[in-house]
Image (tube, rainbow, N blue to C red):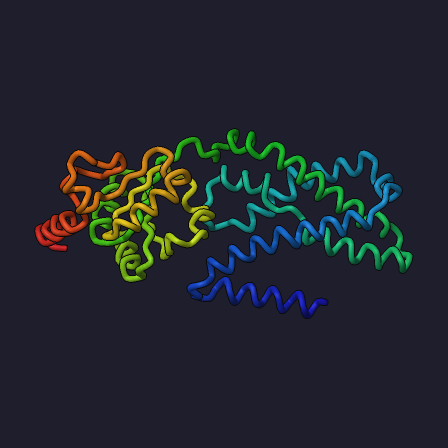
Length: 297
């Protein structure tokens, strides 16, 4: 068992430090798998505990230990492990409150507690119910107060004014760089790694992804996005992006470039049309080229 646990830890370290293009897909799969396995583990742990064991820890010593873990031990562990990181004080406090759940400790304690109890080690009967109640208590406390605590420490997201730009062409990069320079959080997405690389050279946040993939909906980096701009050269892709992501990423506004056919019909100007009725992708590209030549880029 020890060798198996060591192998899993080493494999995780190797994957985490690799440059695999599928690392984000692996992380999404891991999250789904973790929820399933943790749910099963809690059921198995609870099945091994009876009410007589819980009565053993029904005293003030358990309450004191619970308070020490919640207010001292867990925050101390978070602050030590995040030393040197870019996390702010309020973010560390929030992680201390809702972060570690103790599922590994519960699993190990259950295993060793049963073995030690069978061997007659004094006090071994307290290990499993004590750890289980600590984990259960912290989950109930933190889950029910997470929203309130987030507001108290100032990490609660109160507005979504970030901008998601579909397409990382020269047009998108120019617009994104201008918006970023004026204090807006901008994220560009494109399936072309070359465009993404050029966007990152400008200091822009850019993600290599396909808009037809569902993984974009779960990206935590897009939590503060409230505006959507579809700026690709394909009308079909722009319309698809508006139709699929407008509710999640365009709650404050969803816009796209008009097509050539829509430009010919001046009476049928789409409500989500961006810029003037004469600005299609080709026109904007030409303007961008002129701006780049004038600025020397």
